[in-house]
Image 1 (tube, rainbow, N blue to C red):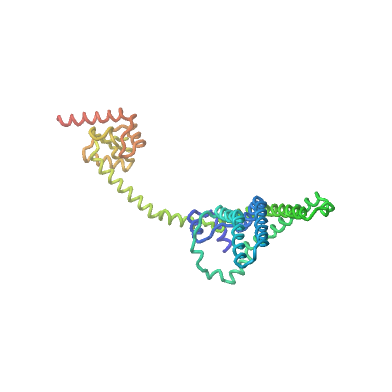
Image 2: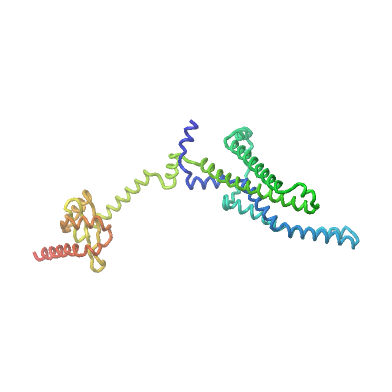
Length: 359
């Protein structure tokens, strides 16, 4: 049954479900990406500021030690020197430390955006469940982490091996022995930096892959069944049965209002049986004749009955009735192209009314 319930979760998570998960602190996040980005860009920052920082530290140390030769060493002097030199060192290290901070913040923001959830600070006794912890150790997620860790080990080892092999193939061991100590130290630093940069680049590439995997796994875990999608849609939009009832009531009220407007019409144009359109024209209040009611079949029959009861003229004009019914909404004036046809009908009705008055 467990496999069956998982198989039913074929629908992608809705925005509401993702929002609820986020509010509970469940997000797609790769800690490896933060670490790898900090490592990679940290080495780049250290390379960019390394020479100036090194020269500043050397200058500070020489100045501090040189001053001790010409002065009496007292506790107060030592404290003042230490404080001033620490302050100078902090100023020199601030670009690197600030860069590390900005890199960490930027990487976290790119992964999850702005997120403040103080509910995550509440203690959760469920996390202390030993049985649940043991189950997590043997879960599919743990297996993937193990495989990814082994992959990282192989990639880092391979990058280091091929880099060192390449560098030593281009250098003669006898030439290295003949170098002075500063030259050997400089070459060692250069090799270490090159190795560290390449390893951090490999780790960063793997971390990007891990991030996309975390996003895929996150959405996969939040997938919904078709029934859950329907239930959520009901909650957001309302029960379809209730909505249908509301629409039925609205249609009934609109029908009553429309039928109440039929006695105010000047004429009802018919098909003669399929369509009926009631027109009203008041030259003082309207620019053109207006459709006050229309209907087909049973509704058309009801309009005709009301019109006959209130002695509203019925004029049979099949093309005009069909055109009015299909193109003009209730409460709208007729378009220009129908002016002539409607004018003929109204003229006929007015003449009919005048004839009735004379008799």
